[in-house]
Length: 509
Image 1 (cartoon, rainbow, N blue to C red):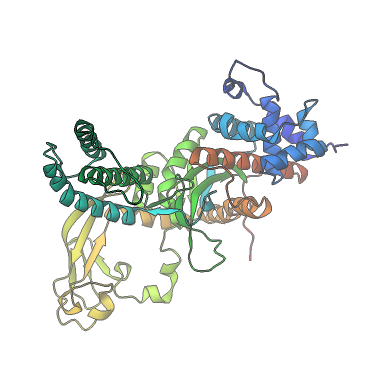
Image 2 (cartoon, helix red, strand yellow):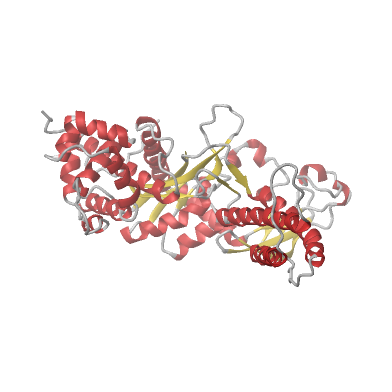
Protein backbone atom coordinates (compact mmCIF):
# COMPACT_ATOMS: atom_id res chain seq x y z
CA UNK A 1 0.00 0.00 0.00
CA UNK A 2 2.94 2.36 0.62
CA UNK A 3 5.04 3.27 -2.46
CA UNK A 4 8.72 2.30 -2.38
CA UNK A 5 9.82 5.94 -2.67
CA UNK A 6 7.53 7.26 0.09
CA UNK A 7 9.20 9.50 2.69
CA UNK A 8 7.92 7.30 5.55
CA UNK A 9 10.18 4.44 4.39
CA UNK A 10 13.19 6.79 4.30
CA UNK A 11 12.38 8.11 7.79
CA UNK A 12 12.12 4.58 9.20
CA UNK A 13 15.40 3.51 7.55
CA UNK A 14 17.33 6.58 8.76
CA UNK A 15 15.99 6.53 12.33
CA UNK A 16 16.69 2.77 12.62
CA UNK A 17 20.42 3.60 12.36
CA UNK A 18 20.36 5.77 15.50
CA UNK A 19 21.29 4.76 19.05
CA UNK A 20 18.37 5.01 21.50
CA UNK A 21 20.12 3.85 24.69
CA UNK A 22 19.74 7.30 26.32
CA UNK A 23 16.06 7.39 25.39
CA UNK A 24 15.39 4.01 27.03
CA UNK A 25 17.41 5.12 30.07
CA UNK A 26 14.92 7.98 30.54
CA UNK A 27 12.28 5.40 31.48
CA UNK A 28 12.01 3.91 34.94
CA UNK A 29 12.86 0.24 35.35
CA UNK A 30 9.67 -0.16 37.38
CA UNK A 31 6.53 -0.77 35.36
CA UNK A 32 5.81 -1.71 31.77
CA UNK A 33 6.56 0.25 28.59
CA UNK A 34 3.29 0.14 26.66
CA UNK A 35 4.55 1.62 23.35
CA UNK A 36 8.13 1.28 22.12
CA UNK A 37 9.95 4.62 22.71
CA UNK A 38 11.74 4.23 19.37
CA UNK A 39 8.44 3.85 17.52
CA UNK A 40 6.90 6.74 19.44
CA UNK A 41 9.85 8.88 18.39
CA UNK A 42 9.35 7.86 14.75
CA UNK A 43 5.66 8.79 14.97
CA UNK A 44 6.50 12.21 16.43
CA UNK A 45 9.14 13.03 13.81
CA UNK A 46 6.89 11.85 10.97
CA UNK A 47 4.07 13.99 12.38
CA UNK A 48 6.34 17.05 12.38
CA UNK A 49 7.45 16.20 8.81
CA UNK A 50 3.82 16.53 7.74
CA UNK A 51 2.77 19.51 9.87
CA UNK A 52 0.90 17.46 12.52
CA UNK A 53 1.92 18.85 15.91
CA UNK A 54 -1.06 18.23 18.21
CA UNK A 55 -0.93 15.03 20.30
CA UNK A 56 -4.65 14.42 19.68
CA UNK A 57 -4.22 14.72 15.93
CA UNK A 58 -1.20 12.41 16.11
CA UNK A 59 -3.33 9.83 17.98
CA UNK A 60 -6.03 10.16 15.32
CA UNK A 61 -3.43 9.71 12.54
CA UNK A 62 -2.09 6.56 14.25
CA UNK A 63 -5.60 5.07 14.12
CA UNK A 64 -6.45 6.10 10.54
CA UNK A 65 -3.28 6.73 8.49
CA UNK A 66 -1.55 3.70 6.98
CA UNK A 67 1.87 5.44 7.10
CA UNK A 68 1.64 5.91 10.87
CA UNK A 69 0.45 2.29 11.24
CA UNK A 70 3.53 1.23 9.26
CA UNK A 71 5.78 3.05 11.78
CA UNK A 72 3.98 1.46 14.75
CA UNK A 73 4.36 -2.06 13.35
CA UNK A 74 1.95 -4.35 15.16
CA UNK A 75 1.62 -2.12 18.22
CA UNK A 76 -1.70 -0.46 18.95
CA UNK A 77 -2.13 3.29 18.50
CA UNK A 78 -0.80 5.25 21.53
CA UNK A 79 -3.13 7.48 23.52
CA UNK A 80 -2.73 11.26 23.08
CA UNK A 81 -1.64 11.55 26.74
CA UNK A 82 1.14 9.01 26.11
CA UNK A 83 2.36 11.05 23.11
CA UNK A 84 2.21 14.34 25.05
CA UNK A 85 4.00 12.85 28.08
CA UNK A 86 6.67 11.32 25.84
CA UNK A 87 7.33 14.67 24.12
CA UNK A 88 7.31 16.91 27.20
CA UNK A 89 9.02 14.57 29.73
CA UNK A 90 11.04 11.79 28.10
CA UNK A 91 12.52 13.65 25.14
CA UNK A 92 13.59 16.88 26.85
CA UNK A 93 16.92 15.55 28.15
CA UNK A 94 17.97 13.52 25.11
CA UNK A 95 16.58 15.36 22.07
CA UNK A 96 19.94 17.19 21.63
CA UNK A 97 21.71 13.82 21.36
CA UNK A 98 19.18 12.45 18.85
CA UNK A 99 19.41 15.59 16.70
CA UNK A 100 23.24 15.45 16.80
CA UNK A 101 23.11 11.79 15.72
CA UNK A 102 20.98 12.70 12.69
CA UNK A 103 23.46 15.44 11.71
CA UNK A 104 26.37 12.98 12.02
CA UNK A 105 24.51 10.45 9.83
CA UNK A 106 24.07 13.14 7.14
CA UNK A 107 27.78 13.98 7.41
CA UNK A 108 28.80 10.29 7.16
CA UNK A 109 26.92 9.82 3.88
CA UNK A 110 28.53 12.94 2.38
CA UNK A 111 25.46 15.18 2.49
CA UNK A 112 27.22 17.98 4.44
CA UNK A 113 30.15 20.12 3.29
CA UNK A 114 31.39 20.66 6.90
CA UNK A 115 33.03 23.85 5.66
CA UNK A 116 30.67 26.80 5.17
CA UNK A 117 27.54 27.20 7.30
CA UNK A 118 24.74 29.77 6.97
CA UNK A 119 23.28 31.29 10.14
CA UNK A 120 20.14 33.33 10.72
CA UNK A 121 17.46 33.90 13.33
CA UNK A 122 13.73 34.52 13.50
CA UNK A 123 11.13 35.19 16.20
CA UNK A 124 8.57 32.48 17.01
CA UNK A 125 5.57 33.16 19.21
CA UNK A 126 5.37 31.36 22.56
CA UNK A 127 2.29 29.59 23.87
CA UNK A 128 1.50 32.50 26.18
CA UNK A 129 -1.09 35.22 26.57
CA UNK A 130 0.11 38.35 24.78
CA UNK A 131 -1.34 40.59 27.54
CA UNK A 132 0.34 38.79 30.46
CA UNK A 133 3.45 40.96 30.41
CA UNK A 134 5.68 42.01 33.32
CA UNK A 135 8.06 44.89 32.52
CA UNK A 136 11.30 45.28 34.43
CA UNK A 137 11.18 49.09 34.74
CA UNK A 138 7.57 49.06 35.92
CA UNK A 139 8.24 46.30 38.46
CA UNK A 140 11.33 48.09 39.82
CA UNK A 141 9.42 51.39 40.10
CA UNK A 142 6.60 49.82 42.14
CA UNK A 143 9.08 47.92 44.31
CA UNK A 144 10.92 51.17 45.06
CA UNK A 145 7.64 52.83 46.10
CA UNK A 146 6.88 49.87 48.39
CA UNK A 147 10.34 50.14 49.97
CA UNK A 148 9.83 53.86 50.62
CA UNK A 149 6.43 53.19 52.23
CA UNK A 150 7.85 50.43 54.45
CA UNK A 151 10.83 52.56 55.52
CA UNK A 152 8.41 55.32 56.50
CA UNK A 153 5.81 53.21 58.34
CA UNK A 154 7.54 50.14 59.79
CA UNK A 155 9.87 51.95 62.27
CA UNK A 156 6.80 53.68 63.75
CA UNK A 157 4.98 50.34 63.96
CA UNK A 158 7.95 48.63 65.66
CA UNK A 159 8.23 51.48 68.14
CA UNK A 160 4.48 51.45 68.93
CA UNK A 161 4.60 47.82 70.08
CA UNK A 162 8.00 48.16 71.87
CA UNK A 163 9.71 45.61 69.62
CA UNK A 164 13.42 45.40 68.87
CA UNK A 165 14.06 44.78 65.18
CA UNK A 166 16.82 46.00 62.88
CA UNK A 167 15.60 47.12 59.44
CA UNK A 168 18.44 47.61 56.95
CA UNK A 169 18.60 49.96 54.00
CA UNK A 170 16.64 47.41 51.96
CA UNK A 171 13.76 45.74 53.77
CA UNK A 172 13.78 42.09 52.73
CA UNK A 173 11.30 39.24 53.06
CA UNK A 174 13.13 37.78 56.08
CA UNK A 175 12.80 41.09 57.95
CA UNK A 176 9.04 41.11 57.35
CA UNK A 177 8.75 37.46 58.42
CA UNK A 178 10.59 38.22 61.69
CA UNK A 179 8.32 41.18 62.35
CA UNK A 180 5.20 39.11 61.64
CA UNK A 181 6.42 36.35 63.96
CA UNK A 182 7.02 38.80 66.83
CA UNK A 183 3.64 40.43 66.34
CA UNK A 184 1.95 37.00 66.46
CA UNK A 185 3.91 36.12 69.60
CA UNK A 186 2.67 39.37 71.16
CA UNK A 187 -0.89 38.55 70.10
CA UNK A 188 -0.80 35.12 71.78
CA UNK A 189 0.86 36.56 74.85
CA UNK A 190 -1.81 39.24 75.32
CA UNK A 191 -4.67 36.91 74.28
CA UNK A 192 -5.95 39.22 71.54
CA UNK A 193 -8.56 37.55 69.31
CA UNK A 194 -8.50 38.37 65.59
CA UNK A 195 -11.90 39.47 64.26
CA UNK A 196 -13.32 39.56 60.74
CA UNK A 197 -16.52 40.70 59.07
CA UNK A 198 -18.81 43.70 59.31
CA UNK A 199 -19.51 45.32 62.64
CA UNK A 200 -16.26 44.10 64.18
CA UNK A 201 -13.63 46.50 65.48
CA UNK A 202 -10.07 45.43 64.78
CA UNK A 203 -7.41 45.96 67.40
CA UNK A 204 -4.27 48.02 66.59
CA UNK A 205 -2.24 44.79 66.74
CA UNK A 206 -4.48 43.09 64.16
CA UNK A 207 -4.23 46.12 61.86
CA UNK A 208 -0.43 46.02 62.21
CA UNK A 209 -0.38 42.29 61.42
CA UNK A 210 -2.50 42.77 58.29
CA UNK A 211 -0.29 45.62 57.11
CA UNK A 212 2.89 43.55 57.54
CA UNK A 213 1.21 40.60 55.79
CA UNK A 214 0.29 42.83 52.84
CA UNK A 215 3.85 44.15 52.58
CA UNK A 216 5.20 40.58 52.77
CA UNK A 217 2.96 39.35 49.92
CA UNK A 218 3.93 42.29 47.70
CA UNK A 219 7.67 42.01 48.40
CA UNK A 220 7.55 38.26 47.68
CA UNK A 221 5.89 38.98 44.35
CA UNK A 222 8.55 41.53 43.37
CA UNK A 223 11.35 39.12 44.40
CA UNK A 224 9.71 36.45 42.25
CA UNK A 225 9.49 38.86 39.30
CA UNK A 226 13.17 39.88 39.66
CA UNK A 227 14.22 36.22 39.69
CA UNK A 228 12.24 35.48 36.50
CA UNK A 229 13.45 38.64 34.74
CA UNK A 230 17.19 38.15 35.29
CA UNK A 231 18.93 40.19 32.55
CA UNK A 232 15.75 40.51 30.48
CA UNK A 233 13.44 43.53 30.26
CA UNK A 234 10.21 41.55 30.25
CA UNK A 235 8.58 38.14 30.62
CA UNK A 236 5.13 36.60 30.28
CA UNK A 237 3.19 35.37 33.31
CA UNK A 238 1.85 32.48 31.21
CA UNK A 239 5.28 31.30 30.03
CA UNK A 240 7.95 32.88 32.19
CA UNK A 241 10.76 31.85 29.86
CA UNK A 242 9.24 33.85 26.98
CA UNK A 243 10.37 37.44 26.33
CA UNK A 244 8.23 40.10 24.66
CA UNK A 245 9.60 40.76 21.16
CA UNK A 246 8.54 42.48 17.95
CA UNK A 247 7.23 39.94 15.46
CA UNK A 248 7.25 40.40 11.70
CA UNK A 249 3.73 38.96 11.59
CA UNK A 250 1.81 41.93 12.95
CA UNK A 251 -1.83 41.99 11.71
CA UNK A 252 -2.54 45.29 13.50
CA UNK A 253 0.50 46.98 11.87
CA UNK A 254 1.22 48.85 15.11
CA UNK A 255 4.47 47.18 16.23
CA UNK A 256 2.73 45.06 18.83
CA UNK A 257 5.00 43.09 21.15
CA UNK A 258 4.30 39.39 21.62
CA UNK A 259 5.83 36.78 23.96
CA UNK A 260 8.23 34.60 22.02
CA UNK A 261 11.67 33.09 21.54
CA UNK A 262 14.52 33.98 19.20
CA UNK A 263 15.10 30.85 17.10
CA UNK A 264 18.57 30.61 15.51
CA UNK A 265 19.50 27.92 12.99
CA UNK A 266 22.66 26.99 11.09
CA UNK A 267 22.20 25.48 7.60
CA UNK A 268 24.70 23.52 5.52
CA UNK A 269 23.86 22.06 2.09
CA UNK A 270 20.19 22.96 2.81
CA UNK A 271 20.14 20.85 6.03
CA UNK A 272 19.74 22.34 9.52
CA UNK A 273 22.90 21.29 11.40
CA UNK A 274 22.36 23.30 14.60
CA UNK A 275 19.35 24.98 16.20
CA UNK A 276 18.78 26.75 19.49
CA UNK A 277 16.22 28.96 21.19
CA UNK A 278 17.22 32.13 22.99
CA UNK A 279 15.51 34.72 25.17
CA UNK A 280 17.64 37.45 23.56
CA UNK A 281 15.80 39.92 21.34
CA UNK A 282 19.00 40.78 19.43
CA UNK A 283 20.64 38.33 17.01
CA UNK A 284 24.18 39.51 17.83
CA UNK A 285 24.14 37.74 21.22
CA UNK A 286 23.18 34.39 19.68
CA UNK A 287 26.07 33.91 17.22
CA UNK A 288 28.83 32.74 19.60
CA UNK A 289 26.68 30.05 21.36
CA UNK A 290 25.68 28.45 18.05
CA UNK A 291 29.27 28.64 16.70
CA UNK A 292 30.42 26.77 19.82
CA UNK A 293 27.93 24.01 18.97
CA UNK A 294 29.22 23.87 15.38
CA UNK A 295 32.93 23.87 16.26
CA UNK A 296 33.19 20.07 16.94
CA UNK A 297 31.82 19.43 13.42
CA UNK A 298 34.75 21.34 11.89
CA UNK A 299 32.99 24.34 10.35
CA UNK A 300 35.34 27.27 9.64
CA UNK A 301 33.29 29.62 7.41
CA UNK A 302 30.20 30.99 9.19
CA UNK A 303 28.06 33.23 6.97
CA UNK A 304 25.57 35.61 8.60
CA UNK A 305 23.66 38.81 7.89
CA UNK A 306 24.08 42.30 9.37
CA UNK A 307 22.11 41.50 12.54
CA UNK A 308 25.02 39.39 13.83
CA UNK A 309 27.71 42.06 13.45
CA UNK A 310 29.55 43.13 16.62
CA UNK A 311 33.14 43.56 17.75
CA UNK A 312 32.71 40.71 20.21
CA UNK A 313 31.59 38.30 17.45
CA UNK A 314 34.42 39.39 15.12
CA UNK A 315 37.01 38.91 17.89
CA UNK A 316 35.70 35.46 18.84
CA UNK A 317 35.88 34.32 15.21
CA UNK A 318 39.48 35.59 14.90
CA UNK A 319 40.56 33.86 18.12
CA UNK A 320 38.93 30.54 17.18
CA UNK A 321 40.17 30.18 13.61
CA UNK A 322 36.87 31.10 11.94
CA UNK A 323 36.89 32.92 8.58
CA UNK A 324 33.58 34.69 9.01
CA UNK A 325 31.49 36.29 6.27
CA UNK A 326 29.26 38.74 8.16
CA UNK A 327 27.63 41.60 6.30
CA UNK A 328 28.44 44.99 7.95
CA UNK A 329 25.41 46.77 9.38
CA UNK A 330 26.04 49.89 7.24
CA UNK A 331 26.87 47.98 4.03
CA UNK A 332 23.74 48.88 2.05
CA UNK A 333 23.33 52.32 3.60
CA UNK A 334 26.93 53.29 2.78
CA UNK A 335 26.18 52.92 -0.94
CA UNK A 336 23.51 55.65 -0.92
CA UNK A 337 24.13 59.21 -2.09
CA UNK A 338 22.69 60.63 1.15
CA UNK A 339 25.19 58.68 3.25
CA UNK A 340 28.18 59.68 1.10
CA UNK A 341 27.24 63.37 1.22
CA UNK A 342 26.68 63.50 5.01
CA UNK A 343 29.55 65.65 6.33
CA UNK A 344 28.93 64.51 9.91
CA UNK A 345 29.81 60.87 9.17
CA UNK A 346 33.26 59.68 10.21
CA UNK A 347 33.55 57.70 6.96
CA UNK A 348 33.40 60.98 4.97
CA UNK A 349 36.26 62.63 6.91
CA UNK A 350 40.00 62.48 6.14
CA UNK A 351 42.09 60.53 8.66
CA UNK A 352 45.73 61.29 9.45
CA UNK A 353 47.40 58.19 10.93
CA UNK A 354 50.54 60.09 12.04
CA UNK A 355 48.65 62.49 14.32
CA UNK A 356 45.71 60.09 14.93
CA UNK A 357 43.17 62.75 14.01
CA UNK A 358 40.35 63.41 11.56
CA UNK A 359 39.65 66.50 9.45
CA UNK A 360 36.10 67.82 9.35
CA UNK A 361 34.42 69.42 6.32
CA UNK A 362 35.70 72.86 7.38
CA UNK A 363 39.28 71.52 7.72
CA UNK A 364 39.42 71.66 11.54
CA UNK A 365 41.25 68.80 13.30
CA UNK A 366 39.26 66.31 15.43
CA UNK A 367 41.82 64.89 17.85
CA UNK A 368 41.78 61.93 20.21
CA UNK A 369 40.78 63.20 23.66
CA UNK A 370 40.47 60.08 25.83
CA UNK A 371 39.56 56.39 25.87
CA UNK A 372 36.60 54.83 27.62
CA UNK A 373 35.91 51.20 28.45
CA UNK A 374 32.48 49.60 28.28
CA UNK A 375 31.33 46.02 28.69
CA UNK A 376 28.84 44.12 26.57
CA UNK A 377 26.00 42.09 28.07
CA UNK A 378 28.21 39.00 28.10
CA UNK A 379 31.15 40.82 29.73
CA UNK A 380 33.32 41.56 26.66
CA UNK A 381 35.39 44.77 27.12
CA UNK A 382 35.14 47.37 24.34
CA UNK A 383 37.72 50.21 24.26
CA UNK A 384 36.37 53.29 22.48
CA UNK A 385 38.52 56.29 21.54
CA UNK A 386 36.67 59.61 21.81
CA UNK A 387 37.78 62.27 19.29
CA UNK A 388 36.82 65.92 19.94
CA UNK A 389 36.96 69.10 17.85
CA UNK A 390 37.60 72.30 19.84
CA UNK A 391 37.13 74.70 16.91
CA UNK A 392 33.38 74.25 16.34
CA UNK A 393 32.41 77.75 17.56
CA UNK A 394 31.14 79.83 14.67
CA UNK A 395 31.46 77.02 12.11
CA UNK A 396 28.96 77.54 9.25
CA UNK A 397 28.49 73.75 8.84
CA UNK A 398 27.76 73.06 12.50
CA UNK A 399 24.06 72.26 12.06
CA UNK A 400 24.83 69.69 9.33
CA UNK A 401 27.84 68.22 11.17
CA UNK A 402 26.51 67.84 14.75
CA UNK A 403 23.28 65.90 14.93
CA UNK A 404 21.23 64.16 17.58
CA UNK A 405 19.19 65.44 20.48
CA UNK A 406 20.82 66.96 23.56
CA UNK A 407 19.85 69.27 26.41
CA UNK A 408 22.92 71.37 25.59
CA UNK A 409 22.19 74.07 22.97
CA UNK A 410 23.82 73.56 19.57
CA UNK A 411 25.95 76.71 20.01
CA UNK A 412 27.68 75.17 23.06
CA UNK A 413 28.27 71.73 21.59
CA UNK A 414 31.43 70.34 19.97
CA UNK A 415 31.79 67.55 17.42
CA UNK A 416 32.64 64.18 19.02
CA UNK A 417 33.49 60.91 17.29
CA UNK A 418 33.32 57.56 19.11
CA UNK A 419 35.63 55.07 17.42
CA UNK A 420 36.59 51.49 18.31
CA UNK A 421 39.81 50.94 16.36
CA UNK A 422 39.74 47.10 16.45
CA UNK A 423 36.15 47.17 15.20
CA UNK A 424 37.03 49.53 12.34
CA UNK A 425 39.82 47.19 11.19
CA UNK A 426 37.56 44.13 11.50
CA UNK A 427 34.70 45.78 9.61
CA UNK A 428 37.02 46.82 6.76
CA UNK A 429 38.44 43.29 6.49
CA UNK A 430 34.91 41.89 6.48
CA UNK A 431 33.81 44.34 3.78
CA UNK A 432 36.70 43.23 1.54
CA UNK A 433 35.99 39.57 2.27
CA UNK A 434 32.29 39.61 1.40
CA UNK A 435 33.01 41.43 -1.87
CA UNK A 436 35.44 38.71 -3.02
CA UNK A 437 34.13 36.03 -5.47
CA UNK A 438 33.89 33.51 -2.63
CA UNK A 439 32.07 36.03 -0.43
CA UNK A 440 29.54 36.83 -3.16
CA UNK A 441 28.85 33.11 -3.71
CA UNK A 442 28.40 32.42 0.00
CA UNK A 443 26.19 35.47 0.59
CA UNK A 444 23.96 34.45 -2.30
CA UNK A 445 23.68 30.94 -0.86
CA UNK A 446 22.88 32.33 2.60
CA UNK A 447 19.85 34.13 1.26
CA UNK A 448 18.69 30.94 -0.50
CA UNK A 449 19.50 28.27 2.05
CA UNK A 450 18.84 29.67 5.52
CA UNK A 451 16.07 32.11 4.50
CA UNK A 452 14.57 29.27 2.47
CA UNK A 453 14.67 26.99 5.52
CA UNK A 454 12.70 29.52 7.58
CA UNK A 455 10.26 29.91 4.70
CA UNK A 456 9.60 26.15 4.68
CA UNK A 457 9.29 25.94 8.49
CA UNK A 458 6.88 28.87 8.79
CA UNK A 459 4.92 28.71 5.53
CA UNK A 460 5.00 25.14 4.17
CA UNK A 461 5.07 23.38 7.56
CA UNK A 462 2.89 26.14 9.09
CA UNK A 463 4.87 26.33 12.35
CA UNK A 464 4.46 29.82 13.81
CA UNK A 465 3.61 29.22 17.47
CA UNK A 466 4.86 26.73 20.05
CA UNK A 467 2.45 24.29 21.67
CA UNK A 468 4.57 23.65 24.78
CA UNK A 469 5.52 26.14 27.48
CA UNK A 470 8.97 26.75 28.92
CA UNK A 471 12.27 27.07 27.08
CA UNK A 472 13.29 23.41 27.58
CA UNK A 473 10.03 22.01 26.19
CA UNK A 474 9.90 24.57 23.37
CA UNK A 475 13.48 23.58 22.40
CA UNK A 476 12.36 19.93 22.23
CA UNK A 477 9.53 20.94 19.92
CA UNK A 478 11.82 23.04 17.72
CA UNK A 479 14.46 20.29 17.35
CA UNK A 480 11.74 17.79 16.38
CA UNK A 481 10.64 20.28 13.73
CA UNK A 482 14.22 20.62 12.45
CA UNK A 483 14.61 16.83 12.27
CA UNK A 484 11.39 16.59 10.27
CA UNK A 485 12.66 19.34 7.96
CA UNK A 486 16.00 17.53 7.43
CA UNK A 487 14.31 14.24 6.54
CA UNK A 488 11.96 16.00 4.13
CA UNK A 489 14.97 17.70 2.54
CA UNK A 490 16.89 14.39 2.24
CA UNK A 491 13.87 12.75 0.59
CA UNK A 492 13.50 15.68 -1.81
CA UNK A 493 17.20 15.61 -2.78
CA UNK A 494 17.09 11.83 -3.37
CA UNK A 495 13.99 12.15 -5.59
CA UNK A 496 15.48 15.04 -7.59
CA UNK A 497 18.98 13.42 -7.82
CA UNK A 498 20.67 16.34 -6.03
CA UNK A 499 22.49 14.39 -3.30
CA UNK A 500 26.00 15.64 -2.57
CA UNK A 501 25.34 19.19 -3.82
CA UNK A 502 26.32 21.84 -1.26
CA UNK A 503 26.10 25.29 -2.91
CA UNK A 504 23.86 26.83 -5.54
CA UNK A 505 25.97 28.26 -8.39
CA UNK A 506 25.88 31.94 -9.29
CA UNK A 507 23.65 32.78 -12.21
CA UNK A 508 24.54 35.52 -14.67
CA UNK A 509 22.01 38.33 -14.99
